[in-house]
Structures are given as structure tokens and as C-alpha cells.
Length: 237
Image 1 (cartoon, rainbow, N blue to C red):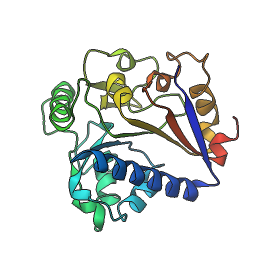
Image 2: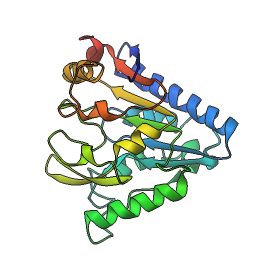
Image 3: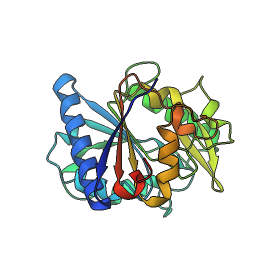
Image 4: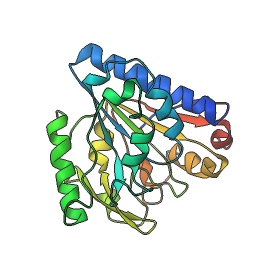
């Protein structure tokens, strides 16, 4: 059974600081043990402030590979692109700009299916293991219980024979890592903010909750899952 370790932050600013410090420590730990570190990051508004702080940390960024756990099938310049958000935060001028960013191929390819296959090939080359093993997997949690682009009521959460697939949610095709890859990470971190996430967070940590309703529960690594939550999100626990 997956064990969830919950650390509470007093507000969104404190949450961003905690997330920055936690990911930085995990990068340092990984680079003490291996030549390179691979991290997969979540899109969305909650982590953006944390990424801005993280990008100012003086780490050996030239030994860090950064990918996204999921990406909307849109052009890189689209305002909804997660890659664009990373370039404006973690990868903006500062130490973090030295990281090797590997964006998900999107509309430059012919179809979402082609993009998913190209992304799978990319992470297989970056990471060791089958499924590929990331040092850090930073995930968000939707108010409907989804994580990455594994939405309830869709096929994506049940894909176990591939490293990537197409997630369909909120009117857009998305390219997403699958649960075998999410669960293979050395450290999984959920970042949860806001009163609107109280119910989803309660369901995530409930051992009797159905993964059909809350696909985030399908992420089951060998180590504890760290949940960083602000007081608004954690109030229901």
C-alpha cells in the first residue's frame, strides 16, 4: 500500500518555497550518486512560482535533464503550452537556464500519436530502466482526481504497456507519461494548493478510494509519496 507523507505549508508562497527546496535537495542527492539527474515536472499554475525560485538555485544544472510529465498538443508559442511556462520560469535567465530541457514534441509532428511515440523514445534515451526511471516526478492534482493527463473516465489511466499515451481532457489532446513511468520514479511529489483541491486530496490519501474515480491513486512508487500542500488544500484532512 502506498504511504503518503504530508507536509503542510502555511500559504501558496510558503508552498512554492518548500517545493523549490525539496526538488533542489533531490537534485543534489541524485548528483551525489550519478553523473546526471533526470526530473519530470508538472505544468499548471500552482508550480510556476516554485519553478521561478528553483531556477535561481545554484545547482549543477548542466548535469540536469528536465522533461514535462505531460503537455498539451499545441504549438510551443501557445499560451497554454507547459513548455512555454517552464521557459518563462525555471529556464529564464539565471542558473536554471543551464539545464538541458527536452520538450515534448507536439504539433511539429503529424499527430498526437506520433508525438506520444517520439516522447517515449526520448525518455527511453534519457533515463535508464524499463520503465524509464526519473529521480524526481513532480505532479499536480486536479480537482477531479487526475494527475499528469490521466483523466477519470478516459483510456489513458489504464495504459500499462507503453511509457506515454494520449490523454484527452478539457477539450485538448495531451501527451502524457503513463502510470508505470510515474510510479517508477525514485521520488514522487504531489504539489497541491487551494481550497478547491480539498476533496481531491482527501480522496488521494484514502486507501479505500477507487482509482477509477481518482486516477492519481494509480501512482504507486516503491518509496513514500511526498505531498506538499498548503493549508487551504490540507484543511480537509
